[in-house]
Length: 245
Ligand code: ZN
Image (cartoon, rainbow, N blue to C red):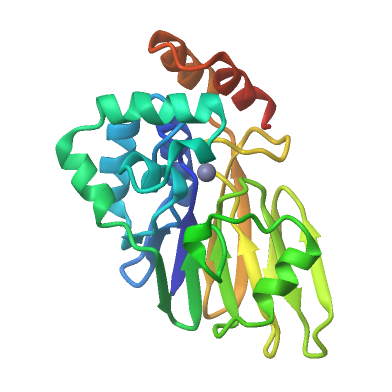
């Protein structure tokens, strides 16, 4: 079986559709998982919430989804992000808000932990940006693999059998999972990549081959930007999409 793992869509329908075209045929044994931040930043929150609800096996709660529901204070967000959350609160339908309420904080299955931000205390919304952050979370992990999103930057950290840290930061990569190692794998962002590659990112984990692949998919950024201009979303949020920052 395969897990197809998407994260940080941020109301970007063009990027989401391009990723699903790239995924192509999904077999009945595959599972599609979303690691959260379905909304925030972009122009199509309702379309993205519905698209994901129809296709995923489960969705994890992201900090933007949480803030949209009024559960995380907006003071934790920079002004353009907070503005986009308020705009989204205005346009999101009640029905789609109810879908957001069903998002889960974490899911454990098949010896994998799925969370949005970090394996420990996922609701603190901390970032794993340094080797020290990664070791802090890896050392107490009960599952050998944790898939995360949140930073919008694809990267993996591993602890080998002697607890030595391995780090690989690349816009796309293939990773062979080894017995006795522990991994935190960030699948990157579908709708707002921040690693200077503007193409959408997502991951496929093939459990039989024990292989993780992070893929990049170009999409029609200009259409998304036009839609954002039309509804007066902040210029910074519009411009960052073409630069992947
Ligand atoms: Zn995000």
